[in-house]
Every structure is written in structure tokens, then in C-alpha cells.
Image 1 (cartoon, rainbow, N blue to C red):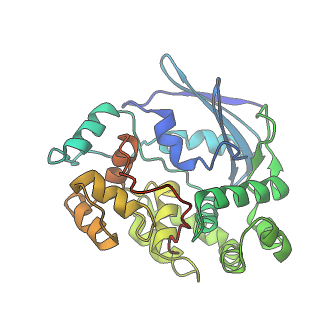
Image 2: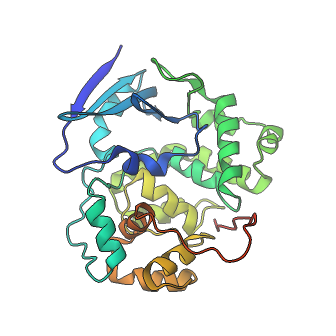
Length: 303
């Protein structure tokens, strides 16, 4: 059965910009973009679902299939930024930020309400490059996930249930490029997945949620922030510990690289909106200068 709705938000919503934090490469089995719109699979409290989102004349048309279709449809407004309040954000002191805000009126902070899935994706990205993390994500979800319900594009799969992740043998983690430290963290998270989902009740309060997430061994500031940004719609948890971000923020805002402490100092005038500032920099088109020949650098993002 197909469930459909037309979501007509009060404010503009750019689907590409808003859903971008969910993309894990062109071969991501959980998110695809084609000429018809955006395809997304998800595991809901009621089972698997596939969603299709497309821009229409009077709003955003959404269709969903699978046991979790109704839950998925109910979550569309929050997925696309309802409750993401940009009022009070003053970027007039920065030409780059003010220009980005003016040119990107449809940027919204999403809220998936899927804590374990967003957490596991962040665990995969600990201390490795994005390319390595995306490979691991694709391999393991393709092997252990369920085929996407409905008319999803070939190869799309639904994120496995927590109990399935707990049963993944050590050699399969290794084969997918996930080392013992990360796989152990993932399994610990899977054991308490049900309680993690209840942190959605905290709303967009990332600080309260981060405390719960960081009680799991192997989950630190960076992983918690990456999770709350996507699952909870947290607007104020920049990804401290990222290899690349401090330099990007420094170059964008003051024309020189900074470290984590410097990044936090630069972001401090926008307390309460710091993740919004990060997204504005991201969609601005700004690229930090490169010096010397390009080279492969291992990403040492912290837990």
C-alpha cells in the first residue's frame, strides 16, 4: 500500500541542502537521488519503509511504502525542518555568512528521529576518511539490510535492526574495513538501541542527548554531535574533533586556519546557532585554500 501526502511548509525548503547531511556517497543504499526526486529508506519503530520526496508546485509531494510508511510520513515536517527556528540568528557581522543566508533561504536543519541509525553512521566515520566510511556503510547494509519496500531504485536497502547488528561476526566487520575498536562500539550501541531512541523525547536539546550517548564507551564529543545534528535537529553542537572543520571555519571567518579551541571561539557569538553557522559555511560554496600538492591525509576525527 502507498501512503501519500503533500507537505506545504510555511517557509522555503531546499530538499537537496536540507537532506545533504544524510548522504553517504553516490552508492549509499539508503539514499538515492534521480530525476524523479529523493529516495530514502529508513527503519522505523514499526518496521522498514521507503520514502520518495519531490518538489511540486504547491509543496513537497511525499509517498511512502512498507510497514513503517505511516511513521515515515508523520515525520516529514520535522525531517524537512519544522521546528528549526532561525529567529534570533544575526550574521550581519560576517559578509560570507550574511550572503550565504540570503542566497540559501531553503536551508533547514533536518530531524530524522532515528538515533541508532545516525549514531552507527557516525561510528563508521570515526578516525577514517569519508571514502573508507562510505565503503563500510555500503558493504554492511547491503549484506545485512532488507530490500527496500515499494518501487525503490535497484540496490536500495533498509538499515538493519539492532539485533541484526549485534550478530554481525567479527570477520565481516573486518572485511568491510571496520576495525575492532569501532565494531565493538557499534555493538555496544546496538545493545542499548531502544533506550537511545527514547532520547528523541528530549526534543532538539543536543546537550542532554549527548550526555546519554557519551555514556557508551567509544562515543565522544564528535560522534555525539554528528548524531544529534541529524537525529535530533540539534542546532548548537559543532563537530569538535574533526580533522578538517576548524581550518575551514577559520579560513571562512577570519582568513586563516584555527584549531578546535579557535573554532569554538569564532563560533561563540552565535551560541545556540553554531550548527546553523556550520551549515551556512558549507552551502556558501567557500573552499579553503590548498597549499602544495594534493595528498591523501588520514582523517583523525575523534570519537
